[in-house]
Image (tube, rainbow, N blue to C red; front, side, top):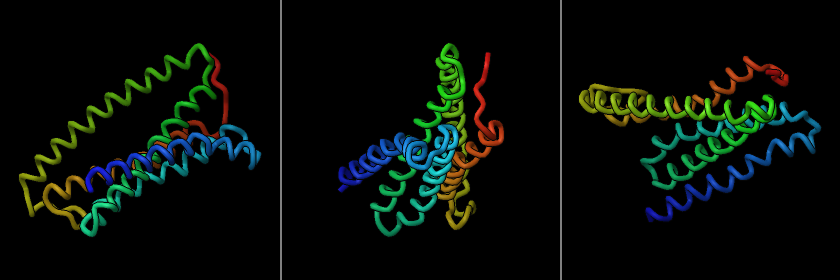
Amino acid sequence: MGMALIITLYAIVTILSIFGGYLPKIFVDKKQMNPYQGRMLSMLIFAFFPLFALLAQPLGIHSAWWPAILIGLAGAGHQAWSANLFSTIGDMFPKSAIATITGIGGMAGGVGSFLIQKGAGMLFTYTDSLGEAFNFLGFSGKQGGYFIVFCCCGLAYVLAWTIMKTLVPKYKKIIL
């Protein structure tokens, strides 16, 4: 059963993330949106997919299939989000700057990943040491720590989209 769960999770991520790269084209071609509007609408839709991960832990007590499916949907949202995010760089910056901007973003992602993993490890150690004395939204001990991480990760994309839309409210080519 474990292998079937993993295959299901990755199949969801693979199939939906491929569609995720195609969705902006649908908005541009069929809805007559400009590429920036189509990409931002797609990214907004995909920003909500990681919120499915918030249901994985509570529903996991009923069946292991729920977390596999819900985390698969969250992972698909992440993949589709990142594909569209990389495309926005090409839309907005001159060709001579695309590799540099992508590299800076990759470095920031790596540093952010390190900090999140370090912080999560410290959180799990702390919540485990408190045991049942630590509660977060109905989860105690280490499970409460895991749910905090799911909440942060689930909400990160909506926050990132909001920041991006605030900084770039409408399409403007950046001239260097």
